[in-house]
Length: 389
Ligand code: FDA
Image (tube, rainbow, N blue to C red; front, side, top):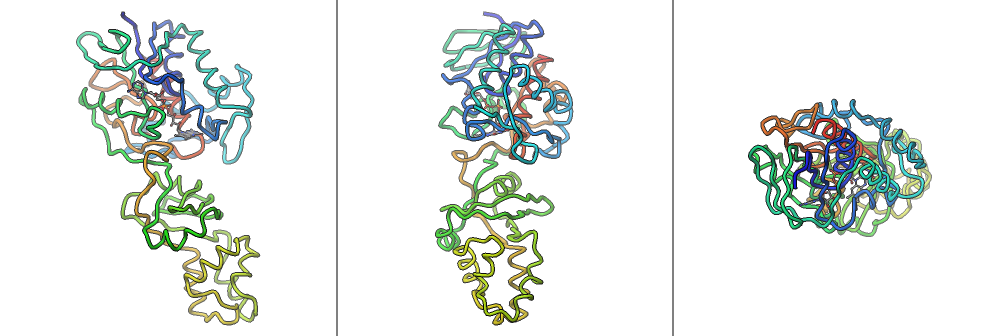
């Protein structure tokens, strides 16, 4: 059976692309090996999907070439997606930092994209395994549902995170088959793990969350850090994990709004234990005690020598942590790396050297920050390919 366009992967980017191409009058087949539609949209944002970020711009993305996403983000902006939601009467709200969530359920987004595909005449088939992709004048697909051919083939099979709901390396394999480079792949937006000694020391603090600033070099995020049984998580850690490389230290300012040295100096004559005083700063007492014990500084204010005070202030503003790894693809929200942007047109998402072959969404080497940026990339890249495939 012949189609103008076949899109493999009925997730966020694939559905957007299929609907856009169908609206142009293209005859579109949308295939997915999963039986359930767009599971990642369903589980995203705690079931309410953080579906975009109003501040999405190219420098909120990690890539060999973050400039690559400028064109797609300009062609299909967060406002375009918001307008689509409003046309479908889906209520939403801003949580913080430009992050938009559905008021009710992420299922509404899936239903909306599905409705857009239906209205555009897209033939969607789930539970289909693609065995083989070949190419001469057209692309030929051998699948569990039979043979198909098409002029344009769009790969929208996402990244490697959460294999338990159907993530596969299919997109990277197709890229390699057609000679497109794939950059190094790593779990991203992922909790970091402690070395054994730190894990033992901080295990009792699992569940403690603190407002911090986390840095690697010039990259910094001002959000909360959560202590877990294995290491560190929370928004600030997930964000920095996309920049972290094995062997690298991360630096955490545990009191970013305070001149700690001056604050400690004010307590120089005080009888109060520092762990109790830190409670006034909003620190849980068990955290303050464990932290100060670890520094040999759980003393009364008056007993803190000036040299020790300066050391303590320095450590509180620049706590250096050397993670030993991440919690891997099972816990990662996304994959860092992917089909190299060098091999694709930023204006159309088509492979430079393979006319008719497109890659969109997470399978491309474009990784957004936490906060709706990854879905916006899926919408923008899906739309752009849909206009050109
Ligand atoms: P996506 O993963 O959505 O779709 C890929 C599709 O391809 C799937 O339907 C899959 O079944 C199919 N597929 C895979 N291999 C195949 C094969 N071999 N054959 C056929 N089909 C195949 N982002 C954000 O912006 N805001 C948020 O709130 C969240 N929250 C979130 C929570 C959790 C728990 C995770 C894991 C991820 C997020 N994300 C997120 C990230 C976001 O879900 C992700 O970036 C997008 O879904 C990527 O869209 P794609 O369409 O590229 O892939």
